[in-house]
Image: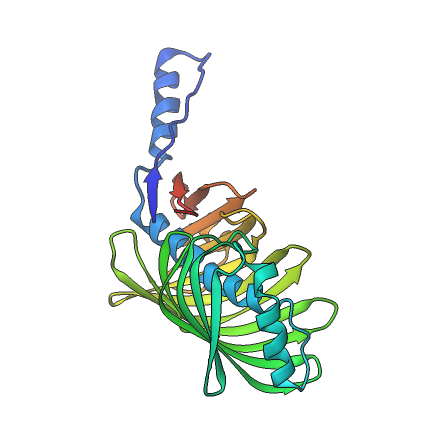
Amino acid sequence: MVRSRSFVVLALCLAPLLACEETLDAAVDAVSADNPEAERAVDAMHQGSLETALLAAIMDPVALGPNIEAMWVEAEAALDDTFSPPGCVGTTFVGESLIFGFNNCAGPYGLSAITGVAKLTFLDSTAGVVGVRFSAAGLQVNGATIGIGLEGSATVGSTRTYTLTTGGAGATREGTPVTRAGNFTANVEGECLVMQGVWTLTIQTAAKVASFRDFKRCSNACPDSGSLVWAGAELTADDIAGGAEGLALTFVDGRDSVTWVDGDAKAGITQLECAP
């Protein structure tokens, strides 16, 4: 999962000694030590993005239309081009669903070490719009164990858009189960998947709201960009900057470190392990 580290601000003071000490004290006070909430936030966001990236990886090559059987054929035919090594994904039909068996696969959007079974069902289908249901339990992806519970639609316009509701699950760094529920969109932009939405995460009996914007997965194992606000209610980064209780987190350039700041103006860096 993740581990957190604090960072130390070094100040060079040209003022008198007392003023210098006060400056250093203020700088140190503004830097937090380990922050379990930041760890939970990045874990939850990362895991939720993995289930969406896997659905998009399977669906992206499929021409959306009213012929569901034709879409199944396209989905199966594209697997060896989408996932590597070739042959790492097997499929079988069960009722109205296609079952995927992954064996240590890598894929687009920074996906790696995919192992386990997932089920995809196409629902109502028209030209350019297809209903989808995607599920899995205990699936290994990028070193995390996740449960997938997505339902919604895939639409083709100027870009491919997935409009989804999640009922997925994962775990905190300590192994505490986490469930997520909420609505969001994911747009395919070139080789990237860009997500926006709001999820409610339940950790044991405690609920947190994750509001995310421009959360982008490209070829890197870690997210390429995006902002996440983690709080007890739906808030914005401006709310946190104004002193509201919560965290504002920023993902940058596919790095494995995520910066955060809270309503008390304390800040830190949380390390994100994006691949096994």
